Image 1 (cartoon, rainbow over the protein chains, first blue to last red):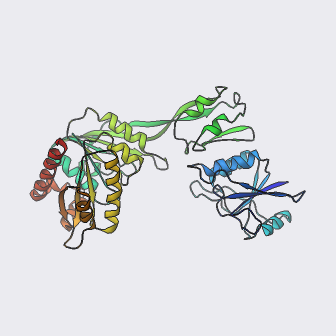
Image 2: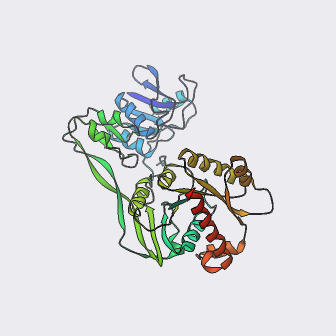
Length: 122
Length: 279
C-alpha cells in the first residue's frame, strides 16, 4: 500500500507538515516494500487551489492513503473522488505515524464544515 | 465628472465623505462599490427598483464526453479543476471565469454556465441616483459586481461619487478605473499613513489626479498629513475629530443636510475637487 505524508523537509527527521496543500514535500512510503521517496510538492507556490493541485499530484502518483494532521475541504474532495483514504497523523515523528497507521491505530478524517479549512475528528 | 473616494483601510470615513459630497451636489449619482458591506443606502434610504442579479461563468463538464486528458487541469492557473477517479471535479469557488478550460478541451466536454454571485440595486433619493452592489457572502470576488455597477451608471447624471471598497486590491482598481479624480481619505495615525501610502501608490500607478481628505484630525501629530506634505499630495480639507459628526453619521444622517457648517465644508470640498479635476 502506497501512503503519502506531507513533510517539512526531504528526510525522515523533518517532521510532519501541518499544511497539506502547501507542505514543501511529500513522503511516499510503500508499506509492502518499505521503500521511501521524497517528492517535491509542486503546489507550494500556487496562486490558489494548492490543496486541489496537491491532491491531484497524489492521485496521479497512485497514492492510496494519506496521513496528515489536517486537510482542506477542496483537497479532501479530490482525495475522496480518487478513493484515497485520509487518516489523522497526530504524532510529531514520521516514523511514529507510519507505525501507528500500520498497527491500525489512526483515526480517519471526516469532512468538517465548509470554510473551517480543516477536518473535524470523529 | 466621476469622483472616486478611497482609503487604504476601513473606517476612515469614505462613506461619510461620499454621501456628504452627493448631498451637497443635490443631484448626481452615488455608487456604493463597497460590495462586501454596502452601507451608503442607509443614509439615502432610496426607493429601490427591481434588482439585477450579477453572474459569472463557471465550467460544467459532460462526464460522458470527458476522456480524462487533463488539458483543462493543467491549463488552470488557479487549480479549479482536478481529475480524480477518472472524473473531472470542478471547484466553482476557485474559478476566475477565464473560460480557458473550455477552449483547451479537445473533446468539447466543457461548457459554461452562469453562477449568481450577488445583486445590484438602483433607485433614487431625491435627485440623486443611487447604485449599490452586494456580494453574496462566501463569494470570492466582488469585481464582476463593480463592473456591473459602473456599466449601469455610465450615463447617470454628474457628479458621480464612487464610494470604493477599503484597501488597494482588485475591487478598488475596478472602482477607480473610470474616475476623473481620486479622493484619498486618511486618519491621523501611523497605521493610517501607512495605508494612505498604499492607495497613493495605486492612484499614482493609475495616473489619476488625486487629493487627500484628512479625517478625525486632532491637535496632536498627524502622520498622514506629514506623508501628504512629503509626497506633494494636496490636502483638500482637514476634518476635525468631532463627536457630533460621529453621532450624526452613526444615526444614519447626512451631516451636510443637518448642519450648515458641514454643508459649507462639503460644498467647498466638492468645488475644490471639481476645480482640481478640471486642471
